[in-house]
Image (cartoon, rainbow, N blue to C red; front, side, top):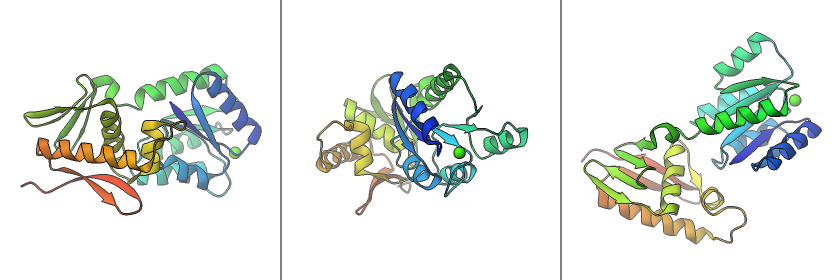
Length: 227
Ligand code: CA
């Protein structure tokens, strides 16, 4: 679980990071809204903790832009303001939960647990769909109509990453971070190899879904024309 903290109060940001790390989360910090949005859009985070009052780009605008990019990442908004209209505005912008400062560490951790359960829509049905494809966690397989193929763990993770973020381009760096992790010495080549494995399986399934290469940027899923 990788959490992004967007909070300009350095001491609070550090406290949050320590709290999360102590509880076995990976946590990164951004101190302004612009870098917060850039990082939130990488697709490598599972939850965002977002302050409202931020330099460069305020939290509500950040959240609106994040949702406009098609990101469904769960967002927990933090604010010193307890005014009802602010909470409503935050929720309207696409926040999943609201915490008013000061808050209890226990309450924050409970929120993160709840949001991380929500983050994989898969947890309830164990299935994710895109176009004519269904990704099944029960069987680690990809299904299209009456055909199905088994996926290796890494193919499954890659497919899940692409489906969850289908509205955006996934860079090779994101793929390496998400699938192989920071500590690994995997290279760009690994991402290319696994993309080619998945493409072969899509062809075998006769799916209309394609993995499009965005030159110099990365990959995204596209639903092709019906043939
Ligand atoms: Ca602030």
